[in-house]
Image 1: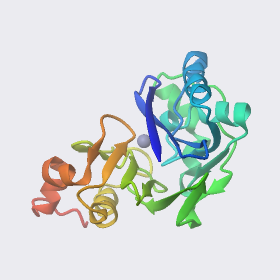
Image 2 (image 1 turned 90 degrees about the vertical axis):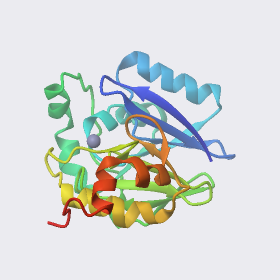
Image 3 (image 1 turned 135 degrees about the vertical axis):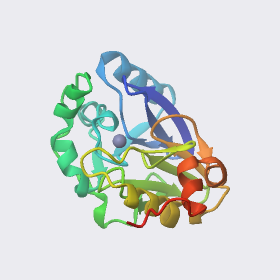
Length: 223
Ligand SMILES: [Zn+2]
């Protein structure tokens, strides 16, 4: 599996293009906003001969959704996301305005509900869908076991975690998700977060202050 990271929109969101030998591609958290960024993504896809078939979303925040409508119009891709985050999708334009970002057209709904799915396939690639509620109720991570690659969205960043003070956020749940559902995948698993640099789970277990204080029993996260 090949991975490219493009950083888009004023929130500096990581949009990942992932593909394999079939040259079918999935766009994870398409955050491209406006003509210039749409062109950057379009050019990357055409330069590499890729055919996008899926918009895969870790969660429903606007900065991860800004480019989905473009991908649907231009390539006819389907949007795959958890229906538990549909309330965020409905509010995405308003939320964007609150952050001072012009949203443009947003997707009308979810085409593929990840809520009931354990994995999702494009080309010859299968990604495991791991529920990681906390930053949002319907947040999921995508895991590719062969290359040990994990897309963590806004759940786990390099040496930080996602906000839990936004609507539907919950600190106890995000920590459970990280400790119970992500760390057991193994120290050598590379993480590709929704913002900031890549990392691996071993580094986060050692140096992520939010993870370390929980592992050391310095805070009670099971409220
Ligand atoms: Zn988010």
